[in-house]
Image (cartoon, rainbow, N blue to C red):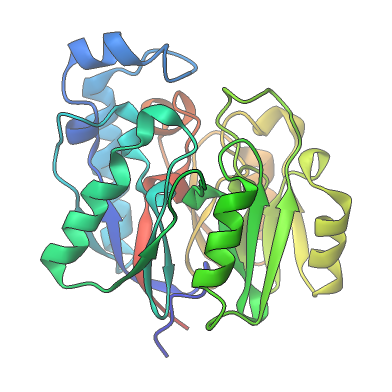
Length: 291
């Protein structure tokens, strides 16, 4: 059965933006990386090599790849297209970005969807803001949405209305201050669903009521250790139930996933993931999934 209201179903088609198009040249990287709060300056050549390997891995796992084109009015952050849209069975909802220098990105996705004939259900509009990294589908058709620095109460109210006809429950998750409003911190910084009964989590930053909800709903939690949090240990992409893609360099999290019965495929992400604080879920906007 085809449904987009899952973050663990088999991905059939995904939208990406290649590193060669997001990181257009070294001058752009020099100009933007500090202002965007990257942890270090990305190396464009290595980013392209890493991204090609990431694409090869997705293709081998049966995923059809679509690419957004290069655009002069987007930043290095456009490498992470998940944040620009939320996908439902009734159509695509375009976001308004909470990060000011990412405001142009959703319009580029809109143009892509129009060209491909995909249905756009609606948009979150200012002063509301929603970023796709703050939204995840849980088992039983539940939509969890963060209230934090990137997604605000007005945006949540709009998203609730846009999805009212298609969700069984809508959960609002308040996020902690953590490193402040300039940090890249989303709901999916602390949870990545891997199967309908399995999720990777970073519990030290997880609100107790939300963590208890997951446990009460039957989830087994794979705990990310503190030393693997900044290296994107919690950012894991399910390409099918129990089959996931993760960044290399998080051996404890990987072993815990394997012990939980998951299949884990890793790739090098020093320049495309760790420096920009965006793992494989951030790099991808799945457009079709199957249960």
